[in-house]
Length: 490
Ligand code: FES
Image (cartoon, rainbow, N blue to C red):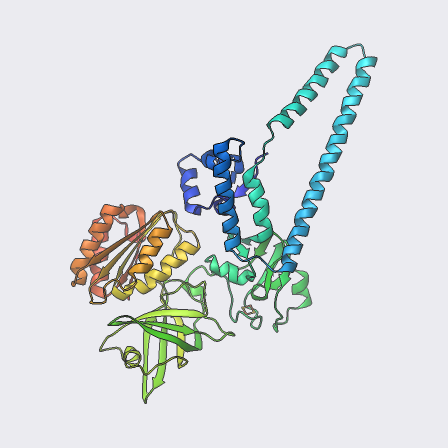
């Protein structure tokens, strides 16, 4: 019998982005009901997943099973206790199903006997004979046509190795894999959950468990009151998922206004050249403090070294899903004393940098539209953060990235862009070089338009002011509504 699955779960089973399934639903090839799709519908659309008994199908099925097995193995298994708890839950479900089946079987046998007995006693045996043959035909049909549903089998296996979490009231979903806490898994999936310390001290990640079981994976100092415990409140940063389905009640940030400004003393982990005029700076927060920010936002860095004090504001180039490791692309500029400290080698590994932020409202806004990103030089930093976030939340069925290089450093992370394009079928990368940011912006928009009609996209633009001005004007001329363009000078 077919099972109904949420889109996220179905996408994981098939191994395709959620956006692909959304497109199939929109174009009428995959029936959906109340946001759910059936395993039968999925098998009709992806017939190579069938486990039918033909030799060819068996080969495909084996390959698919191996691919599925690899997907499972690629993710670390949860801890032994969690695994045992989920297996116990699964076994309980199986035992319940068996008990019910056995009762239905007894009922059918009893019905059969009753029909036989009545047929001998009644004066209208023909009707009862009809009923008897109807029952026999029905049972024969069930036994003859009931085939194995491979997706249901895979789904059962996924329920053991990972847990599916739904967050209310937003309705967002994520999966907890390996030994991740609920907070880590939610952040990896791009949710804007509330949190602070990440280690059970501040209480900001408090959420209510509405359904399912969670398990404490680390001690915590923050005291939950008895009333809170009774209502099911837990700290997401020190709890993992024990059952395969969990429903949480938790507030999420709606936009930059919901993220408080934070001051954190961070350490320099590395400073490496990305080109002659661009440095990659990796900063790390202490274990007890993490920077909560949204993809695309910036932070102000200040430091003192060699008798010089300096500060500068830079876009964070990494995904908010890793809130301890913060990456920046700092360009050489005569007017930037903080960059001078870095280029002069005054800030070395383990130096302390004071970080304050996040700042800026150049963030990701969810919509059903395709995504296009236009970057110029180190404007690539916030764009990279946005793309990583968009991929984490499986936000769009297709992404196009255009990157204009005006400096000698060129497309200093071209490998990263090519890796995205190779990993995702629906990712297009368009590199353009031009020393003039304004002329280059027009050329970039024209090239991107030829690749993908931009009026149907949400377009994010980041780079120096002349680039942003020329790109937004070119986008407007190309018919992109102003409400679909988000721009930042970076
Ligand atoms: S208690 Fe601070 S983030 Fe969980």
